[in-house]
Length: 337
Image 1: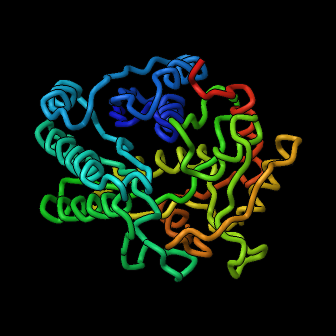
Image 2: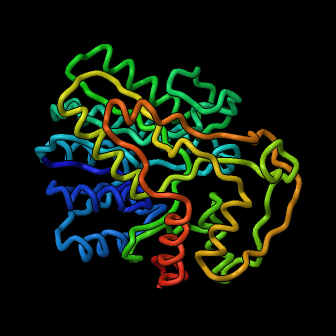
């Protein structure tokens, strides 16, 4: 199968490209490299011994995107490209709507014109907002609470409408939780631009000496140790989930939605402890006030992905931390040399 992967040089994208290559697929990556690094794909080629083509194109360049799809003879698209920082989206919502929503419209129009009707979309658990109905199931009403999450929700709604209007389309909407870890080789992993927005890469940078300490937002939640509980999933499990979804939409038409998570929550301090054990050193942290709007507990019900795709997360928190640390200690500055 020939697959176009938008945002394929990014964290989750590069690990998915690796899995696609290992499964024997022909892969072309479309990425503007604004929040990623082409070095990730060089290393993917090193690991797999297979070639991947990179097209340095922005999804907002509709003519360029159309040209890639028109001449590519693609069977499917896996769509990761998009801005993803919640705080930044609150400060600059128009940029997020333009990049994420308008960019996706350009992609879909180009796919339609080229006769490519198979898409796996990188959605997010943020579409559930701060729902207290845990575990979170795909049947819950969507109520994203920030511009980033609302871009994901709007795109999901758009894709549902597209599949209703044209039954030749098949779309997988993958709502995943908190990716962590890295490929076991330590050659590819998460390389955030600037200050990490997520817990595990921040902890990793504290452990390697790039940051002084971790600020833990809230120590008085009704949880096992007072800190927030989230569902952390290994990036390789996540990548394998994309391949399972891609297989499903080759055989079935319509819009399908699945949570990709472990179905188990871990507290901030449990993650800090597990990472400290993996790194062989203590992680300095400071408890500070809660952030407005943060839920106490959030984790997935992943039963639908198991039933429909035969997929479930296989790697635990300890393996996530060990793999993430192997990547971080081997690449203290990420892909930047």
